[in-house]
Every structure is written in C-alpha cells, then in structure tokens.
Length: 171
Image: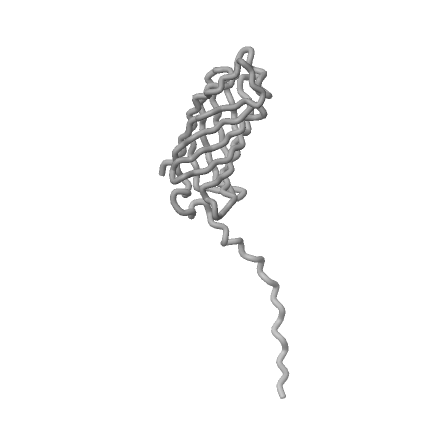
C-alpha cells in the first residue's frame, strides 16, 4: 500500500483590501462627487453677543468636491468671501474632507476644512488667534444635509459662533 505525504503548508497571502466600502465616486446621484457647491449664509449667532457683531455675514462660498478620497472622506477645496463679525471684507481659502458617516442616510454629511483667513485688520486684528501678519490659520467644522441638490449646513466658526447656510450642488 502506497503512502502519500501531506502537501506542504503554504504561507497565506495577506487579506485583500476591503472592497465592500464604496468610493464616494460610486455613490448614487445626487451624492456623486466631482461637482461644484455654491452656498450663502442664512443666519448667524454669536455665542457671546457683542453690539459690534455683524450677524449677517453675506457669505459667498464656492467649493469643488473632488472624486479623490482620504481617511474615508472626500477631498474638497474652496474659497469663501464674507463680512466678518466686525463688518470687514474677509476671505477663507481652504481644503478639507467631507464624510457621509451613515451609509443608509447619504444626504447627511460631516465636513472639516482647514485653511487661511484674511481680513481681520486694525483694532479687530487680535480677534482671531495667530493673526499678526493679517493672515491666520482657520479650522471650520460643519455638518450638513441635502435634499436632491439643495443643501444646508450648520457651520461653527471657532469659539465665536455658528452659521446656518443654504447651497446648491452642480454636476
């Protein structure tokens, strides 16, 4: 009777990358990426109101949501033009990430941007940290919800306050 040796044990290959996580580019319409987003402010509230505060920022924000992703978030870049809390023309140029954390609720999203703020001058220059040159770093978290192509966001601006916005995505 012949004896057969057991086949040699082979090293296992590493587990393949997860393929069950859809890329933002494969999301159903209208949540696809690589589109522009335009938004404006509707209401602003300061956490510590001051008579000098401007509560209508006249925000115009232009954003491009890219198809690239990182840390499970969708890359975006943008520029915002607004009147700051002291009615000075200001700008915020940024990059950031947008996450849709609830797969079954794709209209809901979280967004975090970081960039440079310009426009706080004169007696208000020290109202934002690190503004000694007229340019200061900015980090802006927000959360939003879309209905078809119309979106609204609740945006926190530092420890100073929050803003409600409305916007439109374009393919």
